[in-house]
Length: 293
Image (cartoon, rainbow, N blue to C red; front, side):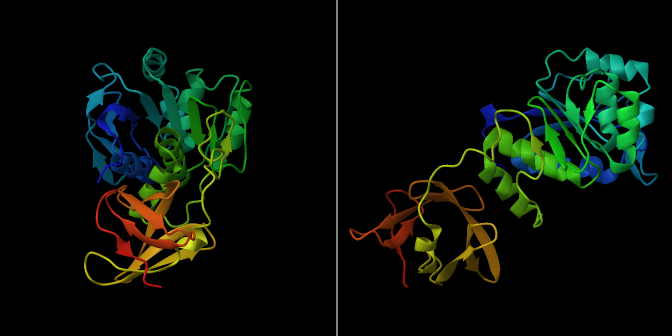
């Protein structure tokens, strides 16, 4: 189930060079695909490229016929060599309709060579930090950061950090709960929301709606299947989970007494005159499933 409305969809161009690191692009591709964005691949030509000497990839487009995109994304694995191709750099500089730039690992070197990172703060793969700093003095290179968000330009550290950066973009565009649902779907259990540097004023982690005490909702509830389930509170991530058939499904607070489930569907809780939670509805005017204890 995708998480984004059609009129909110982003078109993301993944530039892939020969030797590109598999997880650098495959991790973010999984995030963006589930989140409902349109992703297409671009390379210098349409000739097949080889990722890490193993995986053959046939690009959708070359730099001569690629359509416009909302986001340009670049990845490591021969990133430094790709950044020295003047035709590719010219193509990056000529993409005037792009709203955001995103890089993973040494993909940052393509943005650096194109001048996109001039005057900004950025990060890259740990073994390439010094090289980036020495060759591009107009960039403030940050160490020990999973990602750096300058507003319209987001760079991440190496390999798995690209997943964190992609989840951050989903949170930035659709809200934190959408990103948390995506991480749950991917079973990316160790994701720490906001574990990066956000320099822009649109951080999805700063704005929180004052909500009720989540402990009020903990208990056993009836269900349409006839089998009751437990709603428990995880003290570490402060999230409610519905324990059903041995699986913990997250239930995210939206506003007031309204929550959303792992699929993004709304759940409406109700209270009695004394303020105690009495049950929930899956439609605002639907059947009330009682809180049993």
